[in-house]
Length: 197
Image (cartoon, rainbow, N blue to C red; front, side, top):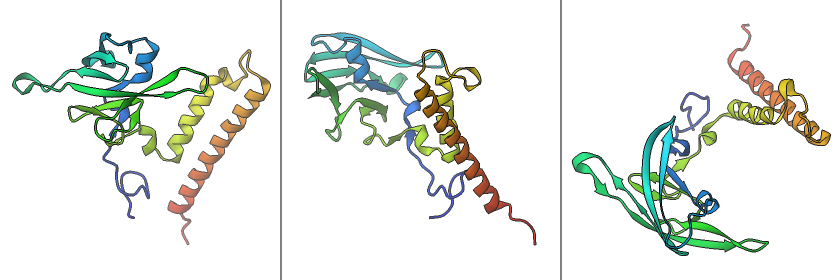
């Protein structure tokens, strides 16, 4: 496969929408907030950078279905896009159960439904990927390091209350990230900047 995109050897460029840019509904959040009670009616809104980007109304019929009530388009092209979504549940090991949306297209269970083309469906049906799936090794290592640094104190010091073994494990992973980035950079330099004869 040829070169593609800005990264060497990246292959065919991806045209999938990114999950972080789409409006989505998460059944885990709704359950945690107690919204999945039969007969419940509530509204759900999205914001990006503090600016509202959309909202829907949700009516929970019973333990097996709910309706997402919304309109699609603007002005004269505005139309009703409401959908009825089936619900499923799976038992948990220590009692209770975990709720799921049933994707209206493929009938698979999903915790998240994404809005695309005016309809809600699962990530696979909507051809959605996460930004992290398009990252190269360097970007993944930087993101991993930033996540670890968020758990450590200033200047990578062990925070109060953290076990020493946990701290040592985090430091090993941190040094591994740096070594992998150095290796990738070294390979890149060797490949593209060969010494002149």
